[in-house]
Length: 135
Image (cartoon, rainbow, N blue to C red; front, side, top):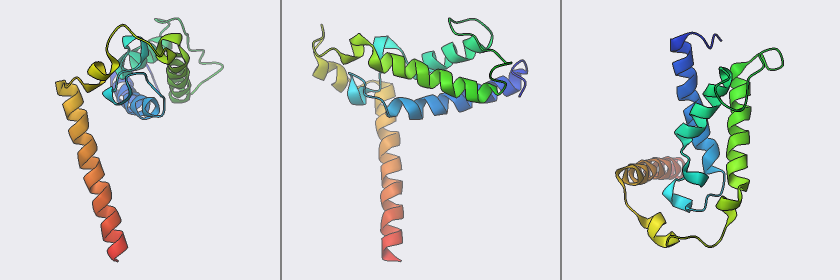
């Protein structure tokens, strides 16, 4: 894969965002179902930092000699960044300056879209389960 090819890089970043979203769901975040990561970061922030490391723009730097496959390097970087955020003191703190229930319950266009997408996936999963049970 050529990371200097704009089309390949765009495809890689889209694939990495999907990977990051899946991995972030496996971690415990203080806002829980609100979908926010620690320190105000988003999945897109994690992807940008990881992609930036391919070009030496972030603290981390990709060594193509040590890790020739950029996809494997990026997955490892995302896993590391998410783990660091999840272990961060701010994420594990139990008292906050805001009302946690209010922050988690705030309805935004993004949270509403995520809720609808989740319900659609849940309905499809239930339909598959019921159809296979009826067979």
